[in-house]
Image (cartoon, rainbow, N blue to C red; front, side, top):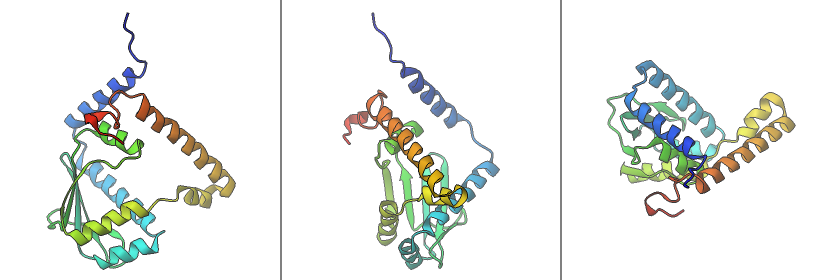
Amino acid sequence: METSSPFSFLNNLASSFTKLAGKVQPPTWVVDELHQRLVLLLNHVLMQEPEAMARLARVQGQVIRAHWRQYSLGLVATPAGLLDRASPNAKADLNLRLTDESGKHIIQDLLAGNKPALSIDGDVELAAVINWLGENVRWDVEEDIARIVGIAPAHAFVSLLTQVGNVLRNFVVTKMPDSASSRNGKTT
């Protein structure tokens, strides 16, 4: 007698959500607000790294456009070394396109510690700056939480989140039948 994995329910749930998300278009104002919040978060992280700001300032005025499915977000480097939203009709100097259409696969890749598959087209110098940012800039969540609740509680909270993240990452890599490490013969 064959038995199915108890994790197949989660896999089916993720597949159903992905199919539904592909059919439902959120209101324009929701997408706009999410873009604005993302820019604020990116700038918050960038302000913690002076070298990142210096590198972005060198490519000021250049536009980076990120694409996934029907969604697109244009960012422009400012003279201050931060990011701002580019106008929708601004010509992109660099296009970054997530090639995997499945949100589930992208999340699996990220949780497994892999970079999602990207198609890159445009200015090589700008691409090098963006690559450097992706490799070297990290959000120090613990420092931000410590400003609110203090150092010890922040450390305990982030340690707990790290443990949960490790368990989730282990689950994705070893238990999910469609995990990033087994998809399309890809090895991690």
